Image (cartoon, rainbow, N blue to C red; front, top):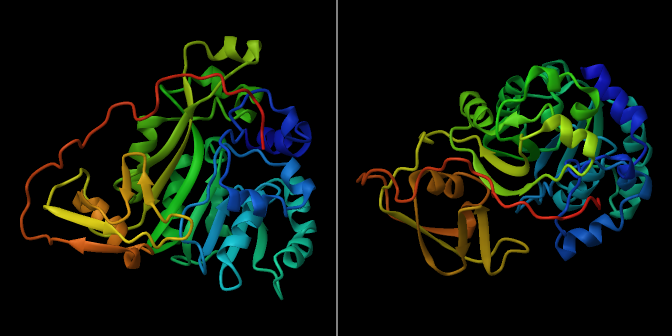
Length: 347
């Protein structure tokens, strides 16, 4: 299957217009500051973009970032501009044709961002064999990936390696396609469905299990949208299976618990994170207004207190008293259930 994927993204697809669904498309409109950076990225790079989300979390200056499945490098160059001269971005991909495009424009983007030297590098390799690459344990502050893990046949090993490569307090922030049930083997072997990021999709509950087993004990859903399959032939094959594109953030933190436990704690967001003066969105269910006392569970406390976000919050309370499960903890299917006709355009 890996050879089929390499051929699909190296030869079959010559640009985003060749996609048959909107699974590998980013539908949302980026904020202005990101659109301004994207306008500086070389057109050949942006034309070979097949991501399904916006993998740009907050507070990136000076971070060391790893992009798993970087393709032609659009997200790498976007992140390159945001981490600045003191940060680095490493992109990994297995498709030579994609990496050739990414590498060809390193000097171009160094000039565009007015850097004295590149802060980006690209490595060719399989995401299921990251241990073979020049990547040190606990060396990255942030790991991103954009609609690629679904293409891996052993997704659990990718998550385990991501945990290994992150520093303590680091984060994996990634977008991918998920299914509402396990994909039948007959569909998983279909090269077109697989290449379109559908038949390799993680069943959402299997993803949560694998993430927790890798060490990411409290996966947080940031955003999601239904995937439209407007190609009649592919829609007929997938039948009743529903797909969602979703962005998750996973933290490498000691002390996280399997559930949201209540210790009577709260935080106050100072409004000081770049581009987030009014509120900070940790995830889909935690949008923290600036200046407001916001009750949080113990896990959310750690995600703010033991990460790069610490200086942007005031912390109220301690761990002395446990009050049981935090009110509202627990979800079934995590994604939005409504389907909307968002079209198939890619940015």
